[in-house]
Length: 137
Image (tube, rainbow, N blue to C red; front, side):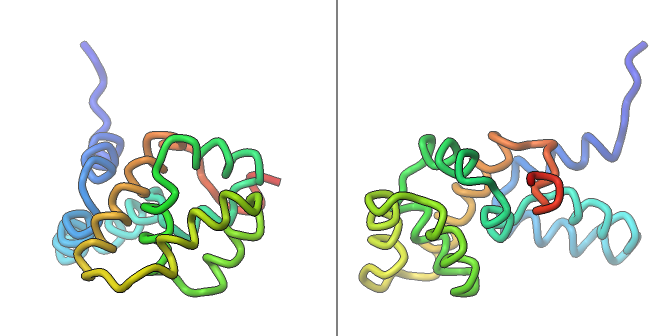
């Protein structure tokens, strides 16, 4: 009989949702079990995690996603986060990401859609890897 791990299954479910759905579900979990919600949040990736990737990991990650989509998604993070990410890539990649980051204004729903795509790709690529700076150095 297979062993069922509820936490791992909840994490898989959350990783398959877009950012808005993740937030709503985690808020609901927090109402009944704040510790569980915090534990789940700590295992999910964020766009800020991209700045902790090594240069090689970041370039490999970027091969599987539109650079303009990454740029759009980075509109939702602090400027120092996007600068940390851009400082690790070549000029050509940087310019392509900046097309999305500094391009024409778009609706917040487009930014959220891009954010969801980038996070989904991040989860697909690094699912169970904790992307903390100390772990990757």
